Length: 350
Image 1: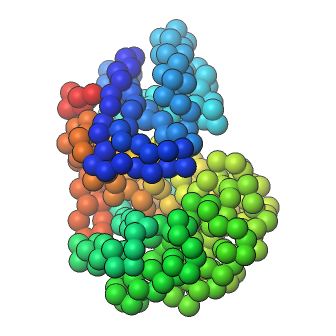
Image 2: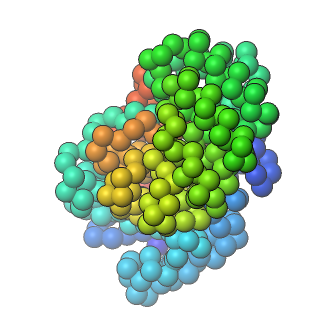
Image 3: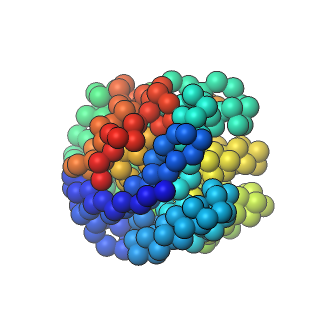
């Protein structure tokens, strides 16, 4: 197993709760298993996963454990709650090699393991619209719809709620009723603000509001349900187990990020558990390189009747590790049909 560090410039700076990011720093993992070479990506994101330093140390541990004790011990040595990005890198490489050795794509391999039916060849995806002024928001929404997207996710929570309601109203008026609208508050509202927003968004046929409250507030999220707009938890899934969310009746939808939950296999398993508890899973990325993005596409393809996912993120990076094998067209992303991820190990250049 080898681990190689990389740095990818972003097309535009990314604002997060922990500051502004201009580059995505991470590691490409390569390993040999069953006469096949698999590749993976570990790209930690501040505030969501371990730090880049902790990720590197965890990968070193995983590398030595893999060489001495095998893949099961290597994965067991990396706790998904502590070093999910590192675990994602190793698990992706492992499953890529397994699928290649079995002569199938990663989506087919995951589907076979779950026995859930044939994976799809394309996955519906949403376009993300930033938190700019009303006219800018409407222009971006129209551009996305003209490009074939039937589902838009609007970022909210930076300005006051009245301004956000105005933005959503303007977008709904501009794109019509046939386009699905989602809203993502990133946990920025208090209960009173979220309540006012939900009431307004119900009249605008908003599908769901993602993380309206702080991730710790399950009771607050539960109180927002059943009012015409579904509640999706993202950050909340980092703080609470699915069982706790179900016990609190705190969500309708769960947002699953392979880089955050510890790998594509772990994400697919979590999606199955989510469905068993009555939640709808939606797979998204954390603004990753092409290896991790493509793995997430395969995961989504192996989830029956998956909703539009947050996978149309290739444009966020100005340079990448390899050519993108999963293009977006008319609001759907193509699932690579080659072996494993559909990216040749020799095509990846950190």
